[in-house]
Each structure stands twice: as C-alpha cells, then as structure tokens.
Length: 91
Image 1 (cartoon, rainbow, N blue to C red):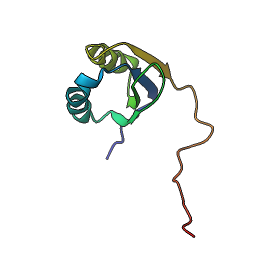
Image 2: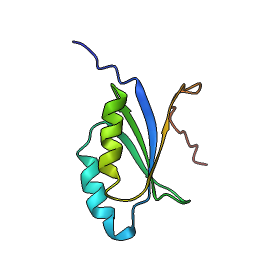
Image 3: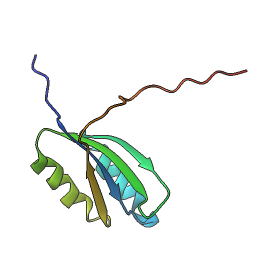
Image 4: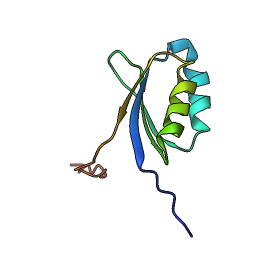
C-alpha cells in the first residue's frame, strides 16, 4: 500500500462571522485534508491545520474558504517539536 505524501502543511486563519459558523463547519467537515479546526481569539475566528500533496491543492482550499471571510495562510517549513499528547494528573 502506498502512503500519500502530504508534504504541504499549513495553518489557515479564517474570519468567519457568527451567523456563518454552522455552514462553515458543515463545509470543512467534508474535507479530509483539514486535520484540525480551532475557534480562537484575535482577528480571525478559526485556525485550521491542513495538509496537501501540492501547493495548488492548498490554493484551491483557500479560494473556497474565502467565501466565509478573509483568510491568512501560513505554510509550515519545519516542525522541530512533533505533536504530542496532553497528559493530566488528577489529584
């Protein structure tokens, strides 16, 4: 079995208005390349973690997301600290 090489990784911020949240959530849940969605503080309402094979696919996603509001995209160059789990000790 061949694994897909999703070497284009990015974070996309989207300024989604509150009245579009349900439509936005329905849209992004259909896209498997969106690995994570976080509601955040600041000038953008959403922070998406995405991965694609080629930059053109990322560009296509960003173009589609812009119907929900302004976007800002940050491509990942490297990840010196890989994702790790959170562990909480209950006392």
